[in-house]
Length: 157
Image 1 (cartoon, rainbow, N blue to C red):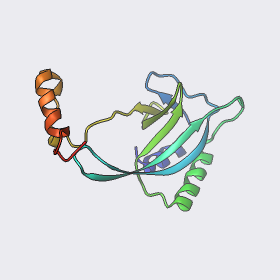
Image 2: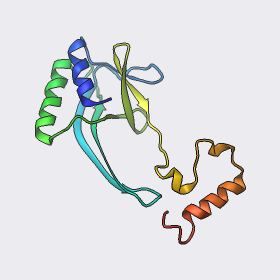
Image 3: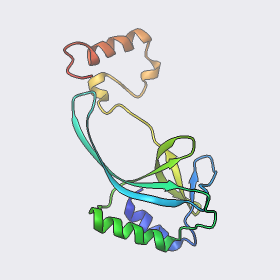
């Protein structure tokens, strides 16, 4: 979900609610302790240099059960973040700790921002011979592909 979408939804809400995929709610006395711009420069396993930029909201809650973040207050925090950090209209990810710190994509459904699990992937599938049906390959075929992709002189890994 993009930041502009969140800004459009917030004025329609009586209260800001975040929900996990399993239906459980982030405690209503949470804080948005940070809004940041995260830039990740990296090289994938195929040797391609990449850059990703995202907007990150960190959610946190403590023992102050009376705290409630109103939509208007979150909009003010977003506005200040945009001006101060030069945020563009990018994808938002949510950082939230249940057992450990997790990064989530965000969607909106039934009056709540839903924290959606994110998955890793290979960004150089064509270079490594990875297809969508890789799980149906024989182990011996996968070993040959790993050697071709990640072996000596392969230029990656």
